[in-house]
Image (cartoon, rainbow, N blue to C red):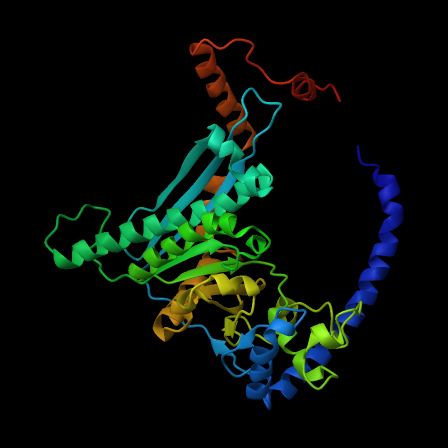
Amino acid sequence: MLDLTKVARQMQGISQHMNAETAASRKRLELATNLLLRSLSQQSELVQLQQQWRDRLLFTAAVPVEPLDTRVEIAIPPKAHTVIATDGSQMAPSHHEIAYCYLINIGRVVLHYGQSRHPFMDSLPEVFYKTDDLNISRQWGIRIEEWLGYWRTASETVALAELCTSWAKSQEEQSKNPQLPITNDQLPITNVPTLAMVDGSLIYWFLEQLPSEARDRILTPIFAAWEQIRAAGIPLIGYLSASRSSEAMNFLRLPVCPHPVPNCQTYCNNLDKLPCQVFDPLRDARFWLSQLQPGQRSPLWRSGAKILDLYGKEQSIYFCYVHVGAEIARIDMPAWVAEDAVMFDQALSLMLAQVQKGYGYPITLAEAHNQAVVTGSDRARFFAMLEQQMIKAGLRNVGTSYKETRKRGSIA
């Protein structure tokens, strides 16, 4: 039990620290703003430096593909549009349960606006219990709990592609056969602007340290799903709330490099702090909060993450920051979305409308999460069903470990 009396004694120190940090943050913001203006006049030269010395940098710097002073008002979305999203959760295996198995649950949501169509919301569970499923990650030295999270990411994307393909096919059939019977919940609307969303980044940083075979197991189905979404003509974005990325800020470290060239591995490899870290630990989201008005987006950037070397040219990731009203959100997208002006503008327009409808967070992603989440009661019912099946199969001594039984029956 937490002793709040003892905690209260430490609160004064926390508040004093936060006051000092606020003052320091203002100075960092001022310095970064000045560097942005300075970099604007030499942007093309800095981009060339980043591209030439990228492999020698000790930090990840994104490349701006628009002028650094770009501020764009996001357009109002069309009345009729559709948004598709998936999210996932998992139930990790435990040696203390009646059986060693795990579960991935994918929440799927399709919301229609201005079309008099009913929303589609459900979840798609998958149980893994076979020996191959439980031991697959051990060959690479990866804990099964970690592998579960990686595989869930792939499952979310595959489910999203299936929804997009199905929706695009229904639109195509309607356009080719305008005389098709229309039920009460449908209107003969075709070519409806559509957006596909996932929660989180499209840059899978966590895969960088994995063996190549393990990475391929995750990335191959993801890229195949992206191609399906692209073929359906639907823009794909990753929505990052409270992003802690510094890719954009790292680009502003190039003009303050004290060396002839930004060759970190030669000049600064053994330093605890690089001399270009003049506004550390300022993050992108905090900086753009001071630069953008609600409803505006930042310049478009191309990520410099090294994991993207494994992506194809059309799958390179671009991003921008958007002031959605409640916060600064980072929006990731593949190259085939960023390089199509119409698709790019449509994606941001529908995304911002989703945030407004969700009172600060995209409502489709929130609903997908709610569909995916596995509650404590869900877990209990799952193992109760499993216990019944095991008993029917003639298994004996079915039950949890003594430790788990004692914890569930605690009198504390």
